[in-house]
Length: 356
Image (cartoon, rainbow, N blue to C red; front, side, top):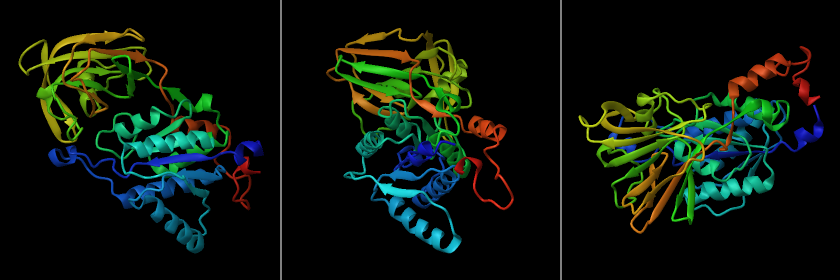
């Protein structure tokens, strides 16, 4: 293993303390992920990443207790259990406990030269990271309310896989896949993206952000559609299965239940199953722009209202195949096992082969 690669193997971790805390927790049966559990997840990630040789991990200096708790756990674990930790570096940035924290942290991690970013959150958190990470690979871990883009994955295993990619033991080209996204442009001035779904609603204000009233949603756009998803993408998945690997997306025009082409009962949030009427079904092709004029209402991205359209004259939406790279954790570990990276060279040694 090239020692220069290992020496430069810094990783960023975005652990959103607010993920899984939106209004859908009050109107559905969603489970929670506490600050202490998120801290433990980051701990397991760090211990896993250190095995392949990750030297440094960057964290947001949040006010919620994740960073401070992690530093205390690190000191206790190192002293009492002999745990081998990477260096923990807190990013020098203001913390406002808003979405800007994630955007600012990703920008600073990119400038610091991290090789990979691990994200703990739901679809909304991953959207923010994807908007600023360029081609830095993401390990997407689910800790939010609606979790269609990220995966449920044991953090220790994800940490080992992340470390294998960050140190270069498994090449980025072998470890990752490119994701589709939806791009949106409002009046040729404001651009953003959605990883999972883009909805046009009748709401005239942002409010609590989360979109959970089916009668308010007019249209749904998705880059992929799975019937085992949760949220508005589940509606599309019940209409037609579109894989993440295909080059198509889907556009649905909604109507009241009992009208239109068909009516579905879909899980809009965990435990919240609502009837949704489908009036029109259209296939999205890459870079074919859907242009809409003189709209009112809001645009929601990955389940949260982001823009009002009170003064909007034009809205352009298109499918882009050139979205963020995500690490396929099982595939990375399969490759590492085949190449002998997951066992020690001898029974006397506790070092992995690529640490030598």
